[in-house]
Image 1 (cartoon, rainbow, N blue to C red):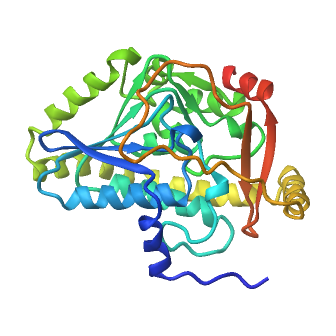
Image 2: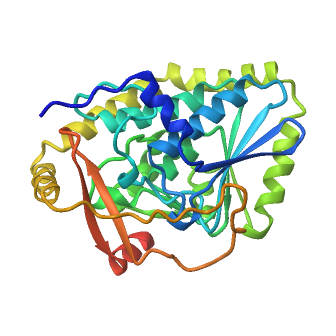
Length: 327
């Protein structure tokens, strides 16, 4: 099957689609980006990624910005990848051999690490899958006590696109998280080294803004050197090479016996009509305040990107998801 050819114009066009982020400046030299798909728990597709990455790059060039906060509208930070909105042109060019989508995602996380200006993740509610990876790619991570952090899909869908746990949590914690598909509370994520500090959910906004304002008092050029010195230390230890190897391992995984079963499932589901996703969106100028609530998902559309660029939705019943989230 002949694959479509995308150009730089196709990648850039993602930025001009319906807004899926909100940008404001809550304090001097502080920019805040809000992931704004609360009705979908801020799941990330190609459009949100493109708009987020574009805004981060704009902030990096803006003399009136020294630090960026990323948060989620509504009840959750980001509950994963929206595979229904992960079709067509990627946020940027990535070769289309095995593991194209995971490599593209990892490329975006590396871009955040390479920015001169620090990025703070403000995590509440669900921070799962791609949401976990986004927050982990940020320089500082502040978490609500009752947040849920993890990559539960390792139980039935395989490896994360950014296998960061060993680098942040150490060998024993990483093995426990990966082998048990553990989902951590915000407090536990800090104890294990994934998060920087945890706060009660009702004061998270104020605490993060206060910290961002402190960071913003440091000149931007000094912040760039301070950030780069830490990242270079981990690069010297091989972190990025290891994360790239992880994507290659993820691609190989789909050629394993269990991965082969998933591939056949892809072929079966590819023959069925595509599942329609909700198009309901929240206004780009207003979004719900964060509140404690029960999970809104009755069924979760989970998916796998296989080497032949086909996406399959594997439906999991609510009770199964609840069970995974408690492990």
